[in-house]
Image (cartoon, rainbow, N blue to C red; front, side, top):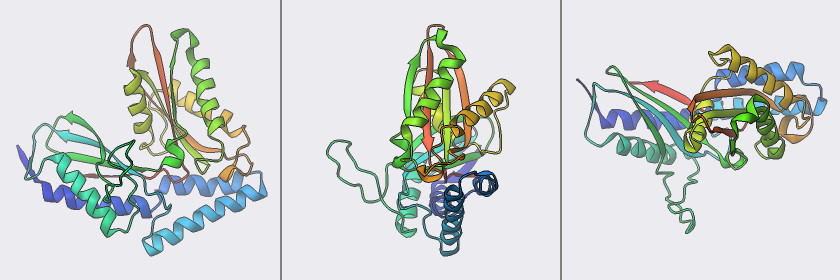
Length: 280
C-alpha cells in the first residue's frame, strides 16, 4: 500500500487549474499554426493568428486564455494500492479547485442549484469521474469546460440500423447547428456506445486525448478523419467568419453497447480545449 496525503493532491490540483487555463497545449498550438498555412480565407487566417497571439499573451502574463474558465471536470485513475490520508480524494480535489480558482484569479462559474442559480463563489463542486486501476499511482486529468461550447453539445439514441452513416450525419449536423457559438475552430469529442450516460462521458473523455493522436482502432481513426473532412467543408471557419478551418480534430471513443441501441454523444469544445494531467 502507498500513502498519498490529501494535501499533496490539493496542491497539485491548484497548480493544474492555473496551468490549464493560462497555457495552451502544444498539440493545439501546432494545429492552429498549421491551420494558418492551410486556411483559404484571408479573414480566417488573420483570426487564427490573433488566437495564437492571445495564447502567447495569456502564457506570458499567466492570465486566462478565455474569460470563461469553465466548470472543473476531472478524470481520475486511482491505483487500488493507493490510500489517501487526510481528506477524502473528492474533498482534496475540490479544495484544490477552490484555491486554484481563487489564487489564480479565475472566474467562478458554478451555481449550487441549477434552478435557484446561487453562485458557490469557489467554482466547486467539480465534476469527477473515477476509474480504479492496478498499481500504486494516482493519475489526475483536469479539463476546465466552458459553456459556450458545452451548450452546443448533443446526444442521440440512434437505431442500430442507422449505422456509421447515421453517426456521421448526427455529428456533422450537431457541429452545423453549433455554428460560431463555440469559438471555432472546434475540437469535437464523440462517444459511441454504452448507455445514454456512458456515451456522454465518453464524448467528454475524448476531448482530453491530444488531437495529434488518432484512435488506436484504424476503423475509428479513419472515421475521425472522414468526419473532420466533412466538418471543414461546412464553411463555418475560424470564429464563424467563414473559411476552411471549422474544426481542428474529431476524437472518437467507444464502448460496448446493447444489441438494440446505438447511443451517440457529441461534446463540442472551443479552439483551446484545455486539459492537463499529472501522475502522483
